Length: 196
Image 1 (cartoon, rainbow, N blue to C red):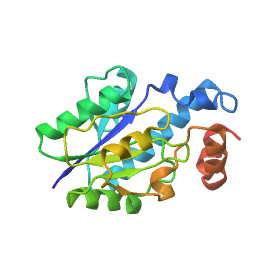
Image 2: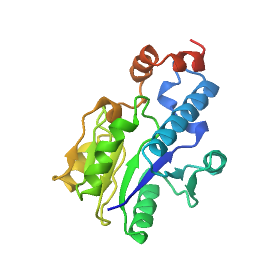
Image 3: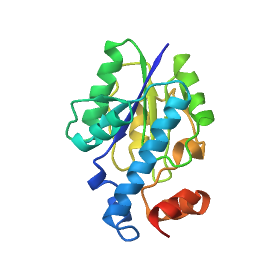
């Protein structure tokens, strides 16, 4: 079964607010853009064309300029946008996979594994260190999204047969200061980007 990959991207002006004690507004915007470019390129690297779930018009233009398709009806939050994306996958009779745009260690090699599981009809999910859900996919279309704090447990209860991926390349996002510090220690480009 073919898989439609959706990448939600928040408005750059509102992104990474929990890092405000470490990074100024322009730095957070630059970080969000860098991570989004990395995620979108990685999805393309496995032969999939990502559909960007744009948080606002600026993000939509950013994605369009990079040659990506955009879900042109951004709504009030991630749950709404993910539902619209799921419905698009249903219209196309494709499985769906939501991959968050702030996974600094994401690689094509890591992403292939959940894609293959979905192609074989198996739901997939990955937990972030703080209990979020940075990766979620299913072959069914009645799934109800419940993003927000501790979303992994709520999502897993809906898909108890899902294959759970604990690979840091799929799980580790940048939400908290310690996430950023860990990523800067491993990715030289981030320190250069943020001037530290």
